[in-house]
Image 1 (cartoon, one colour):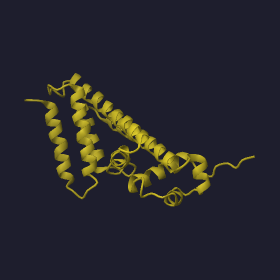
Image 2 (cartoon, rainbow, N blue to C red):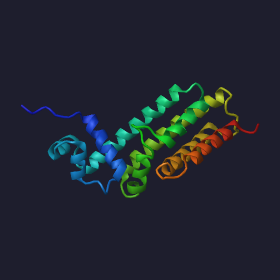
Image 3 (cartoon, helix red, strand yellow):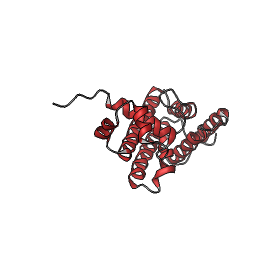
Image 4 (cartoon, rainbow, N blue to C red):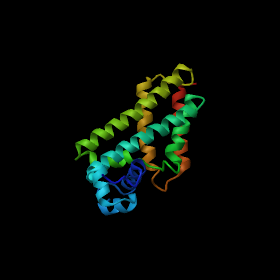
Length: 194
């Protein structure tokens, strides 16, 4: 009879995700992972496979957490405008569970050009985020909050690209006021010519 696992799989996967997010794929060794995750090397291999398989699972974990965080922020907003403002705040200021920066951006810049699986997972995650932005903008257009003549899909592309840039900039010691100003300017763009 096999031994029961002495750890919660989702919890240790989140720890792996955090370490990959912080250090990147190449700089993270199996020893780093074993120590940070708090499990035995054999348990790591038995549960998650090799380092690359664990990395792919960490991307999935991040994508799910990000979608949940965005959906939560959107659902708590009374208006689409407030939803977009809240998303910018999340990306600029982060939270304890969702620090500044973006694991997907890190994965793209480090791995996507040479790793088809990482590229596909990153592309899927980015497309999902952009779809959420499109839904939010369509709601704002339907409710009369946004009158910009661009289509919801075009505005979602611009918003998503802007948010990716914000997430990169937020990792620096740069001005948070500048980023919040960018958010305000984007919301003015959405209002159109008044």
